[in-house]
Length: 219
Image (cartoon, rainbow, N blue to C red):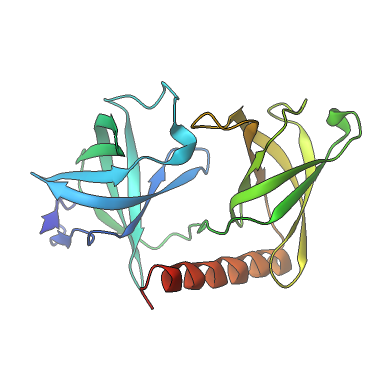
């Protein structure tokens, strides 16, 4: 089946079930999801973990989603119309026409590496967390003990990415309680990686994605 296309544009095929979908929430924050089904033109996607319990994500909110093709990506404006908890799913309906967009977009991935956070705002004591995902523009990690970090604090993060350690100078974008009753907090750090570090991040994510596909039996 196809999704609505921008005026004058040829029909655009809907993504296949299981395709990775990114939800563009603004301020450079793209949340990773997966297409679970299409029903009567509505797209059923997994609820991103970092949105659990946040009331700002309620029916009626509009944002863009996108998915990657070999030489382009497809961007589709959508409206959130329903949420379910068991299993955690979002139901989206198109709010405009889909379009091709070749703008570069950071890909997120990876998990499990230790992240060391150093900041003067935290009494000079480093904090350690576990990487949840990373891109060339930021990372998300889980810290099992609360810290004194606040939004806007400058932080130096060190994380081992398979072949080398990446040292990243960034700003705290978001801190929120860990979902699902887990202890501690989830922290999102935004940064601009230099090309050598960005290359290391891309290589790490590629290796991680290959490993994930193998574990899922896809390769």
